[in-house]
Image (cartoon, one colour):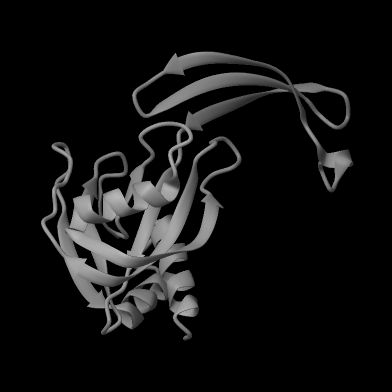
Length: 183
């Protein structure tokens, strides 16, 4: 149900134009509220999960990596894509946390499900707060080259607010974790 039916676009057709490993792309024809039609290019993504791991001393564990698409070195919360449509994001969150950091969470709390770029992409990311952490062996994917960094959560939030941490899921996750922990 649409709260504002006068704004609703109605899909008329949806044709896949690209099928990839990570994404599919389609051309969707829609009827606009004024009766005209328009093309929407849609990136179809399985979804993902991301984790804000916070230890008993309120340190957060972030992952530094090179994002070649933007040619930038990022510091992000651990995250990864769902392996299949319908996978439980919580299972994905546990898997990605251990793969990328070697950490396991005794408690995992959903912070939110975020639509990353709803103007053209179906990706949703489940953002989780992980606590009661224990250290185990990491085992990143063969194409992942990561460096785990531990820093005070307050410092990480400061870096978000100064604009230093620009990855959207990381910024939102850190701010929501900060609030969820009572700050």
